[in-house]
Image (cartoon, rainbow over all chains, first blue to last red; front, side, top):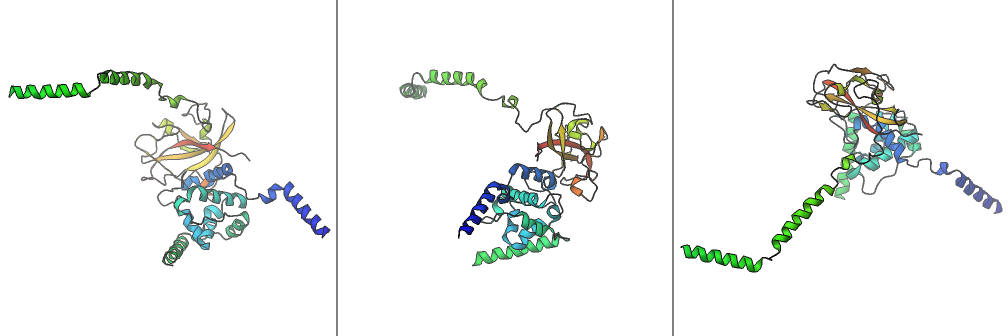
Length: 151
Length: 173
């Protein structure tokens, strides 16, 4: 019993002196915005609206959070998966973009932020073909939504 | 007929005299005078106030290739083509799809995020060709390659010149 208490106490002390462990994926909005500007904004434009053939993030990217394949899609697209950002930075800029651009497309219940661990697994499988894959993901989400509206 | 007009006018004049306050005219005139005298106090000169903190201090000339914002540019300077570092020449359209990099501003020692917006819709301007290419990467990093034509979000893909717009302060790790 005493040993268990000491163990628990040691754990508490470790967590207390290593805030970095617990706050590994903490959002730094300035850093996230900078990475958005450097690696996303050139094509997706400052407000995420996109242009011509460039798909919008604004009021749209939240739809992808309505299915698992959609959630995975946003990490597996080349701009995410092949970027020079590390896993934590990529997770952060994705979460920041969702917070700032998803708008009306965000699921009513909100979303679970990406973690660096999740991003690491998903980006290891970058999409080779994007357009058809995207269309099928969106069709699947539309079907899910229709089902939800019926029931 | 004349007496009818007479009576009508008399009625109107009397009712106006009874209903309208005697000082109404003075009140209205006073309002106009005070209003006119306070107009110059309104904040019409806000643009001349302190600059927002993200706006960099400036040094150098926008028409020189050496100008700090052009550190990663590859093209004709819009400031030599009837536009400026921030704006396109008349008759051209600014591409919303841009090449983005950072440049060091010697005036305040900070790094800024610069968006190189191409101006499109006319043939190449031909003036002030400037190729500094800092941070330029080969085409297998397409978002960091400035050799391609960035007239992508515009109605015309004809490249005219490049602007260099400050979009923010670089995040320092």
